Amino acid sequence: MRTDLLRRAAAAVDARTPASRDRALDGLRALALLAVPTGHWMLGGFTVTPGDGVLHNASPLGPLGFLAPLSWVLQLLGLFFLVGGYAAARSLARARERGTDLAGWLRGRAVRLLRPVLGVAAVWALLIPLMHAAGVPEGTVRTGAVLVVQPLWYVGIYLVLTALTPYCLAAGRRLGAWAAAPLLGAVAVVDLLRYGPWGGAVPSWLALVNLLPGWLFAYQLGVSWAQGRLRRAGGGLLLLGGAALFAVLLAVFHYPASMVGVPGAARTNSHPPSLLVLALASVQCGAAVLLRERLGRLLGRPLLWLPVVVVNLSAMTIFCWHQTAMFAVALPGSLLGAVPGLTAGPDSLGWVLARAAWLPVFALVLAAVGRFARRFDGPWPSRLWRTAAGAGAAVFTVYALGVV
Image (cartoon, rainbow, N blue to C red; front, side, top):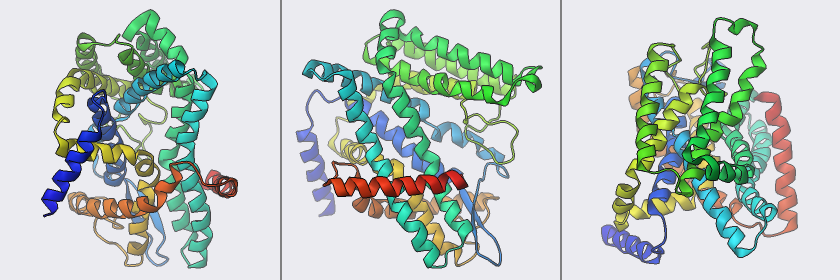
């Protein structure tokens, strides 16, 4: 019976999908999006301080260095920004056809991105005093706030890239897919200055220069792809060239193997992005271009298309609330002490297996939270609602700035 209901639902969704819909692009977006919670849930752990029961963030990547290749699979930010650039270019073109000016288009994109962020921040502004009143240790509250903030800074980066879309379009018209090459070169120069023999004489703030070209690289490729300037030959070059560069950076220049930060490590690839991040993004973007048609045909099957639609409809809910879901499970777990895979230290293969078993629990809690949280994604009902949410978000921001 359930199978029949699922098949009918999938068939109905498939029938309502316009023939012009780019299913491959939606599939790539869903894949990149699901990698965010999966990566945070598998590569982030907790420990509990004996005695006071304070919950602390912990990473398995320090004691379990063999997990670093897992971060190559779960860090799909290159794919995330590739699809973002493609979608933004198409969206801006449609807006101009409707007569919407650039300012109006940017305002609409910003509102859709910021509403869910303000929502989760406002809810946490209420949760913090409630947790204090319930006797939750201050250290545990700080741990939860840090978890919530971790993914949200990408929204700020994404807004900046969105504002640069007209310039990316102009660069794509002039240079095609090669418009991304100067961005790769800029990151390479900064890395050379940071990690070369004169690195000690270079100011630490220089690393921040990589923030814009590092994340703009895949976004620019996405814009060029939407313009028809990135084709299969370019995809093959990105895939092979990125893989070669990735191997050289690891084997010859000894870049850290993990794509995310490791506590206590002297170098990190992700904050800000290093050349290794761009090499991996090149591989991901090249594979996406090469597999697009095959993926589109595969998603022509209703049962495969249905989850893609569900994930895309819940995109910002998943992005903004997945860390809250994990914290909601870990918080009561901390009362029990060191629970394997949850609050016990992430320092063994047993922890990896136990954490994998917890993933469905996190997902179920996220689904439950999402039923409430999705109301923040759409238009808000009144000015009072918007004012209250904005005030709450401001309170949480002040608190977060003090603890992150």
